[in-house]
Amino acid sequence: MMCGMPIRLAAPARTVLDAATLAVVRLPGGARLAAAGYPYRSRLLDALSPVRTDRPVRVGGLTLHLDGLDPQDGQLRRIVHSDHERTSRRLLAGLVRPGDTCVDVGAHVGLYALTLADRLRALGGRGRVHAFEAAPENAALLRRNVAANGLAGLVDVVEAAVTDRVGSASLVRGFNSGMHSTLPTPAATGVVDTVRATTLDAALPEPGTGAGLVVKIDVEGAEGAVLRGAERLLGSAAEVVLLVEYFPDLTRAVGADPGEILDLARRHGLAGVVVDDPRGWAPLPELGAVLRAREERSRALGRPADTVHEAVNLLLARGRPLPPAGRDRRGG
Image (cartoon, rainbow, N blue to C red; front, side, top):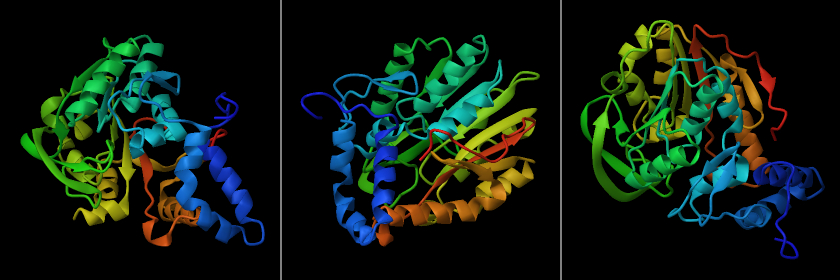
C-alpha cells in the first residue's frame, strides 16, 4: 500500500518482483544482494498485492472466494501473486471442444475447474466438468466458487481422492491447502485424514461418440496412481488431452517413479509439450533443459540452493493438435 491506495500493477506481483530482482542480479554484487533479500520476498509480494481472504478475488476473469484460508497459505499466495499457472490454463482451455468431458483432479478451490467450465460456456454450454477434491474445506470453497461464477449447470463437485483403487484413502495433510496428498510428502504436517477414494474409470462414463476427454491432474506426487486408475478412459476416448504436473524430486521423495507419466504418454500415443509457466512452452524432448533453466532462475533470484526443486506441467494430447513451441506474451 502507498498513501492508502493499492499499488496498481501491469503484471502479476511475482512477475514484477522477479523482473526487478533479475535486473539487480546483473549489477556488480547483485547476486549477493538478491540472496540477502530473498527472505523478504513474501513481505514485498504482500506490499505489491495484499492477500485478502475476507472478500472475493478476481483471477483470470473468475471470482474466487477464499474464506477460512490462512492469508499466509502458500497455494493461496501463488493464486493471488502470480495469476497461478496462467499459461497452462490458457493452453488447456484452448484445447477444449463443445461436448467434452473435462476433469480436474486435485481441484483445490476451483481455478482450473472454473477455467474449463467457463470455456465450455463460451462454446455453447455443451459438455461437463467433473472436479475432484478430497479436502472437505477446499471442496466447500470449490462448490461456493462454482455457484459464484454461475457455473453450477456445468460442474459436478466430487468430494473424493482420485487414485488407483476404490474405497478409502489416507489424505496426508500438507503445510498449505494445495499440498495435501494420498502419499507422505516432505511437506506433510503429520495430520492424516481418511477420505473416500475412487478411480476415474469407476467415477466417469466413457465420453460420448466424438467427444473428447480433457483432464488436469495435480496431486502432489501421486499423479501416476491417478493415471493407472484411468486406463480405460484413456484408451477408449477418441481424443485425449492431459495436463499433468511433473515434479520429479517430489515424486521420487514419495517413492513413486516420475517416468511413469512419460511411459503412459508413449503407451497411449500422446504427443506433448512442456509448459514453463508463465514464460511459454517447449517440445517434450526439452523437458530436462526446461527444468534446469527453471532451477537456474530460482537460484538467480536468491533462493537457497538446497530448497530449489522445480516442477512443470506436461500438456499431452492424442487426436488434437498441440500448439508449436512459443512464449507467453504476458510471461516473466
